[in-house]
Image 1 (cartoon, rainbow, N blue to C red):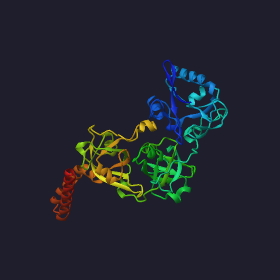
Image 2: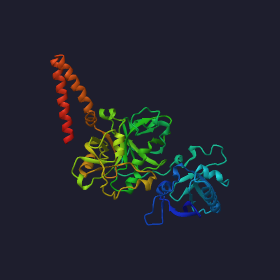
Image 3: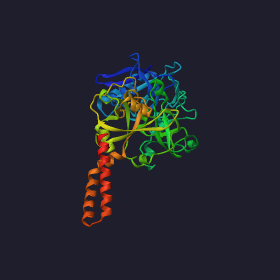
Image 4: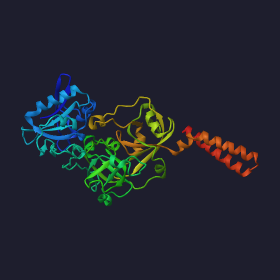
Length: 431
């Protein structure tokens, strides 16, 4: 049996969990209902550590009660101890061993762990437990996040046959070293340069696309190359993992994406964010507006009513970035329910991206479905409009000065610029 154990005020309690065949441990779900809840979401709600950051240790099956008693007592004495831990039974039916997924502090409480060994779990995944006798056993390299994945990910007709199967690894070692103004990137080994090329790469979570028909669990990111990344790994930004519903350390597909960059994207690459597309309310249908939270406007550096650029990945066969320029408005809390879309908190154990509500016509222009992640950034015109007041004062001052000094040509030029900017500003405010 596989269990999620939780420390309680009275001791501890167990919830049966089921591993899904051909899926990573992080995809485990409870079996107390027909559908079950995601273990990742339960752990998050309880304030526990996700499976990716835990260590896999082997112990005697008969020691489960001793382990649970020690870990629950540690939690009772100090709230700093994780309130959750997991236990998995290997296959075939070897009831003499149990694999525990524990934090470093939990592993150190007991000294009953068995020597390292390879085991196959109920999901078909072969894992190797750590050697706690090694002084450096707590190294991050020994966490489940960096355990090699040995089951091919599913492929469907929408995925390019040249897509490469890689395993996600943290982006922390590279985020401040690449010098890229765009925070959303992936880093792969240079050996993949011929297949992936330059510009953008498309990262795909085929598991989520299989589970939710019509969802595009894929996203375009800038691609970088580094010899520090192993050939079977891809360093992926954590925000992008959330965008495609991928848990840390799990496999994904990477394929060649669009190559060209718009100059405006380069200029404004510092001011952007990711949002998840959701349906618009009835009032906003068939209008070129989107609704977003104040937090998104704060990140973009513009105010409600400004025009924003929405960019998304078009149809898979085209592999292009489509864009729509619309007016961004503050959300009013009238959005529709996200029926049929993934619950990221339940699946990944992480808070989801902020939402951007757009009507069906806008989603079709972008080629995205509801629940798909999109880029949001300010339009150049909106930034100029926000600065219109300051610019107009400078132009008026220059015009007055040129009139006073009888510079007719300069006066005409300044007046013309002022009139053009005024018309542009009024036009944008009315659109």
